[in-house]
Image 1 (cartoon, rainbow, N blue to C red):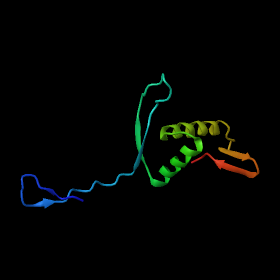
Image 2 (image 1 turned 135 degrees about the horizontal axis):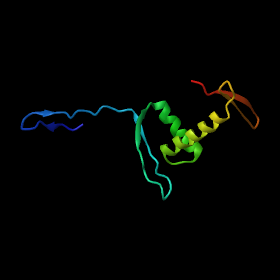
Image 3 (image 1 turned 90 degrees about the horizontal axis):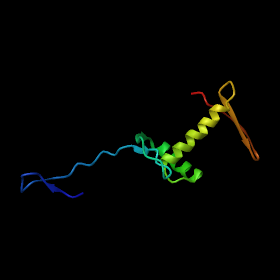
Image 4 (image 1 turned 180 degrees about the vertical axis):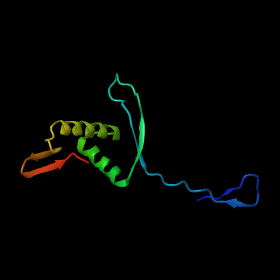
Length: 106
């Protein structure tokens, strides 16, 4: 860290303040396609665990932006909610793995 002189002083120095480390924040917007225009941009803070999950899903979904991950997750959640049973659960099955029951209720 480099010392900087105090304003209006020639002999004394102070160390610059360190910026507080902020939590991760992501910006989402509607900017896909050549005819789309950004209508709203939303920024929100997430913890490290959520940031890591979004990065993992970015690779899993094959998309480049956090906003694209959020759009895909919302589309998936919409499909899941439309096909949920009366007890607000869905069952995911496929391949050789046993079925997994997921609750959509809080």
